[in-house]
Image (cartoon, rainbow, N blue to C red; front, side, top):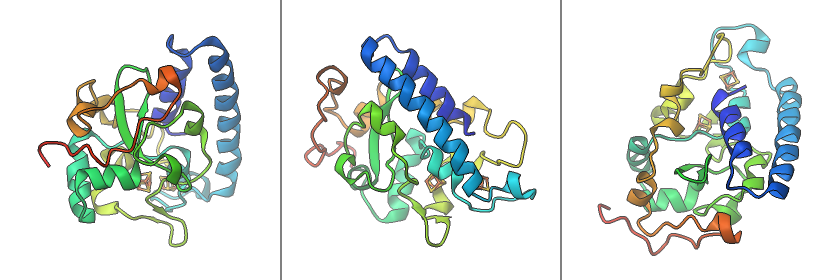
Length: 207
Ligand code: SF4
Ligand code: SF4
């Protein structure tokens, strides 16, 4: 299991902001998803399962929960893809939060075209697909040379893989970072249950 994912699930589940009925739904979805991931781990030939000390590129960790890039990692990835930061957000990312206070950007999954560039509704955390940058046919990460640090520390064949919280993408975000990338970002999505509008008119001043 990828520990940041478990941590995020638990934080969301415990949040006071989420109304009780939604917490109940959240609990059920989280439990179902964790069971699903256990099944998926049987379908993937992970390095740990095969018994080798190198990544088999099986994609399980890219299926379980897409990487959360640290704020400083976003610009280099946009440059690698020949995109502006805003284009990167509007083509490959969703806005997420673990505690309804700090919001961060992370990769969307395949088949999340309807929410790319927007706040991800809580239940869509459990969408069952690979990270949008995982090439399912060729089994590799399309941004491998500039992949987030979070991806580099996941080595499923090692005990305690990925346990160092200081290396997690989510720990690098504070409440101001989202405003740096999306200056008119509003978190009201969690109050009125609507998506925030696409960010096409919100060019960060630096870019
Ligand atoms: S690190 Fe991830 S992609 Fe690599 S073998 Fe392990 S589970 Fe598969
Ligand atoms: S960015 Fe690359 S390593 Fe990270 S989840 Fe996506 S495909 Fe996997």
